[in-house]
Length: 249
Length: 319
Image (cartoon, rainbow over all chains, first blue to last red; front, side, top):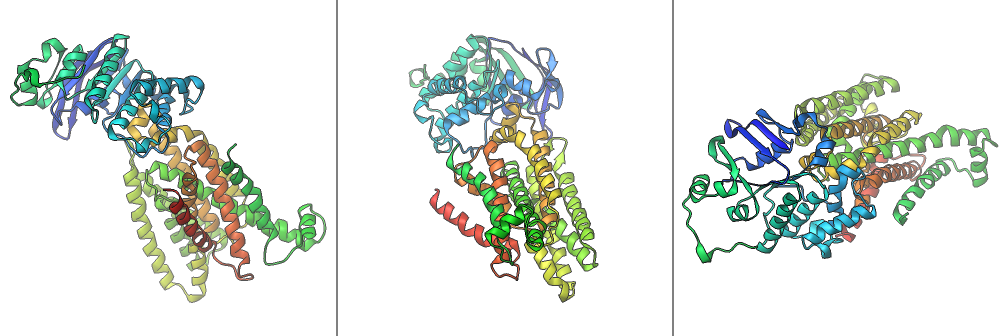
């Protein structure tokens, strides 16, 4: 169980999150929604223990993250960062294998079992044919799928993903969301920062809406993703698009 | 084992053998063999064991230290142009050494002054770059560049004020010169210590390429890793500079030569950089001693003249 207690996050004088109480339980799939700059990335980093909050704590199984060893956290929490250095020199398979570092410490997990798991992870995101290709030569969308495959390779109980759907086409957006939803169904905890409420409604049982000025509302997606809430969240008028709107299944 | 690592490892004894075999005094094969076995002519034995072997080992240690420091700094600073001198420690050491020369200090005094200068520079880099949030690589770079400029100006001032009889010695030190290297044992110990510190971090350094936050999320204790690697690189640079002055190009180019040949994993890159850097410097020093014998060239000039075309050829071939 990952739990934020009275969490305060600020950038300079701007409050991103104020006194947030949030419990992410095994088996739950959460969507994190908010405008650009609302604090989604800061919250993901704080929940992962990669940024110290200005107030409150994040606890894993009842103990503050700061009391866990970094290596132990890496076996429990996997993070997809929004941005990442792109100068990795190896193959796509090498890149995905690095996700095994917290468990193997050899950085590469090049035993047969590790390679098999990495290949399965690549296959899940249509990257089988790219396994031996240089990572740097991938397109933006392919690279994003390889990054998610690396996160899965980490084999953690809790997955925190910052904009996992960026650069992805519709087919692969659906593929990633199905995978995340299935991982939650198998008992993992998933939280993904998204920009498409339709994906949140379809695949995530819970949503956390990050409003401006640090206000946050967590709850069941069925209760949270209303037209009124989303208009208040994004500060724009919305209309039901009917048959003109398409969401991949 | 792949051919390139075998070749690099084989280069170590080959370069040392060449460094011992060639010098301003011609020794034939029989004389060399006798001297190596501690037999035969006393003069030949003295040349081999008293002069050439320590100098060859000093060259190897110096090159290995510089290449190791360069490989570490390039990954830590995420900057392919990083070399051991980017930390400003060579500038500090140069300013200290030249100051000692101006004051007519002994060799030991010169080493002490160089060490003090390097320590001041390293202390300043660490003080400005290590905060509560850990290391800030950009501040390391900026502080190092600023210090290098400041020390460069100081060195220029000392050169312009120095009596002409001292200027050549100063220039040799600045360009890199192994002739006053003396006993290589401290440098070899420093090399072994830095290698022992850095090699076990190879896997974590591989992960660090993905960025600090990603490395942390994968379980790397990033601040600790950076402290070990920055510390190791600093000690390696200081040891190399004390031994041979500011020998350029080895620390910058050797890691890149290996990467251009497809060696990226630090588990292979770090030991191969030590072996290749050490061998190349031992060979360059042999050339510096013998090309215009009895006149010696500054070895730093030889490393640059050889290194630039090799790197350019490799860059042209590997795209």
